[in-house]
Length: 298
Length: 104
Image 1 (cartoon, rainbow over the protein chains, first blue to last red):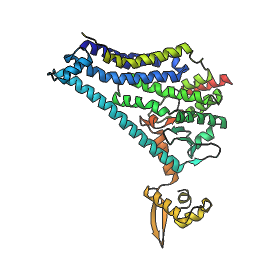
Image 2 (tube, each protein chain N blue to C red):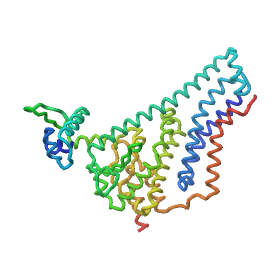
Image 3 (cartoon, each protein chain N blue to C red):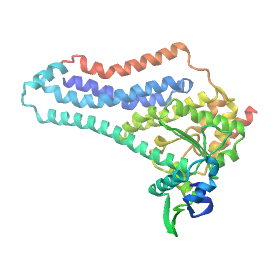
Image 4 (cartoon, helix red, strand yellow):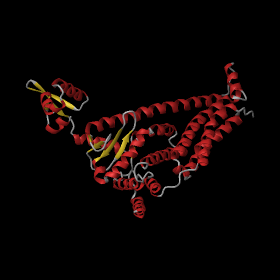
């Protein structure tokens, strides 16, 4: 069983370290953001589950060769060594932490969103030419959406002054895509992972990549109805006009990458490659299950 | 809220007159004003026989708070709202401009 724990732990290291870095450096995700997001979701889920599983496997190690056998032996109540108990507690703590962080970060996000929406509804004006859009009277060019059940797409007057009308429409299509495809839900699990393991490089990379990929997904949706060059120009204008926040050192956040992708679109991923990504996703998801089922006597 | 911002302290009667085109009863406007007061957006004074309502913060104040929230430096800001584009560095802006010029 200790061997089993080692095997599960090794998978965990791969999932949390090597794989995210490799995936972040690959270029194919730009050609099929939706598929890449699916793979990231499976990595996040499998990583979280296997972190718990590793500790759990160590805890069960002294009592049996498989998880089932060990659990049965456990119920008859043999005395366990201290490290087994410690690992069991760690597994339990990790599980509780992940779940509670998921709940808390969701509640906090919903509250912040609600606060902002109340303000938007209070001060924004509706422009009859722009359906479903709230316009805020402020010079700083800013376009964003508040996703959720009562979504808002918000533009400042600065954006309307800065962009031509076709560019504004392309921006709105981008934000509307976020709202309609519920990209906020895609990001949610990674926020929980990020809050649970704030220093783990793999998790940080995952958060960044997922954020970039949903932007690309929304771009792709927007260019179905709007010319690519128009959206790219809007990206450039809004990005270049925003005052860099003092001391924050915010880089483009993929703005350059997104614009290049719009200007020189790469062919979208071939069918076989897409199937391979789906297969990889299924394999990643099967890892935590395999870790439980395979009897690894040793 | 609009009326209170534009013309200072107002009574329920004045709001009803100003927004007569909405076709709502005077009592409905009183309810709206009471609700805004409870939310901490208006404060109420007694002047003569009618209550007057004054906006606690100006529209600009509210916009300033909203922009602070939207541009805030909080780490989870991106979770709350999804920006179209964040600021780019001067070098990136230049690279972008050149790419766009090539296109045209």
